[in-house]
Length: 313
Image (cartoon, rainbow, N blue to C red; front, side):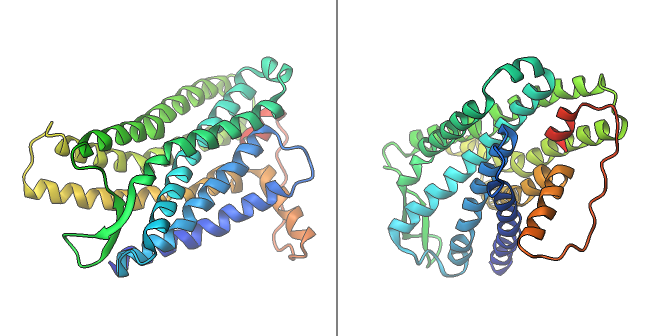
């Protein structure tokens, strides 16, 4: 239990500074934000919201849920909202990069700023709707522990149906569909990048794309597989015995913690690896009076289009 609490605090301490820096550097920019930066800003906000919930869960692991029923609902809804919004903004970034690289002519004609703000509003609205099952969460005494827990409690007569419906939504809208969109968009984008001369920058952009997809799979696929196994057990699609039941319960808990790491990975993959963001970060540091200790490496001049560089780097 202590190890889990330490792990939650560790993720909290990693996620807060990284996402806060990304949000400040992008959000305080005086220039009009392009769609990619706008999605990054909202992604950082979503990941910050997720990080804010971690101290509550860390405390509940050791002491039980001591924050009351109302906070149980609020924290659960906030966690679900950040979960869905973060993944949907990741999907928006993949679509935006596809449009800039593959459909550059159409992108130039469209009013991308107006569209991107509408997309952000739609993502938060969808995330809010999908987080409403958090209203079923409440604090109650657990039969397996002396502590008060915060968890979903459905009407016993329809608990299986509600649980199945919410999990189908979580699997499809929180993993399968976003993953399919990212694989499709990034796959086509990589094919286009291969036909662009650019040497090092092209290879670096392709490595960033691969890292984004691999990080998403490593962080979230184990949790979805564990939850699917639990769903199969609960619906009696797959027969099980006590050892299998305990193994799945432990896997769900462990893989959920793994998924939380994604909020720490996002700033690194989408911002700090980019030369453009690092330049803006150094300008921001100079503006607030932080001494510059490292110099910014110059971008190598290549024939790679500036759109590819600004989008992926």
